[in-house]
Image (cartoon, rainbow, N blue to C red; front, side):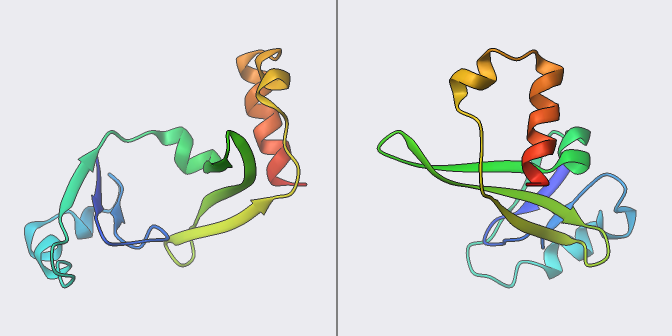
Length: 110
């Protein structure tokens, strides 16, 4: 399980299974300095650690921009990178699942 704190950004308060030093009640309680903040648990998806996450912002059903987030291992935070070009859903639907992953990796490098 991954532990995430609300009222946080850039992966600042995300604890993955390998973060054994921060997976204790003392640490979790010490990070509740923002009023109303809470900790939640989420399933661990290893592919997100390796490939990152794409966030698509839509206005009127059309993509306005896409942001790729990937963990920065040196700072233990997320790196944000705006995708400049991307495929339409129709183009992606014509691909196989493995090709879609390849396309997403390609987008990160454009």
